[in-house]
Length: 232
Image (cartoon, rainbow, N blue to C red):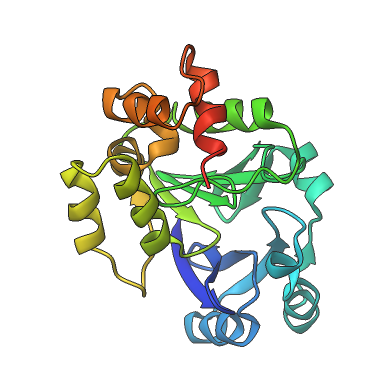
């Protein structure tokens, strides 16, 4: 299976996962560009899905489904299915609550489409209010191999690296990652995230020291997670 990334609006990112004949759109706000790509590759768009129900991710869902004839699988359906067959492969669906209560991540081969759960260098806002659930979602995603690729719901790389540098000013991996930034392809590996993402680095001495200077709790890993999430 292959993946094609589509930018739309200011910084949103949608995706097409496809094989030789079939495709599935995730957060398909770039309707015309997705339809054009499908025609170009002679694909059949079988499903349209969303990582979560916020309007900036669902904005193109109905138009894309109606224009292509693809079946729309709502969030409840994909969570219950837990797997979506496509061509000769299967796309796994993981419930990853935190940003919203119903947020999901899609997994096929060595890639994760994480929506607003995990970005490149940061994580999403916890609009669900379930910080502990969010913590466990991130821990689950970190259980995948280092070479797993992370495809997020937005391009927040420059802003996220500015925050990461504020927390760890001596972290040269942040500079290296930012030097490789390409706005036409937004992704990272989990190995990258473990090196640059402060929300995943709460056990690092430099991060703990930063939190202490802010007067924030640091006694347990979960306390440090809460503290990092509280940083302005």
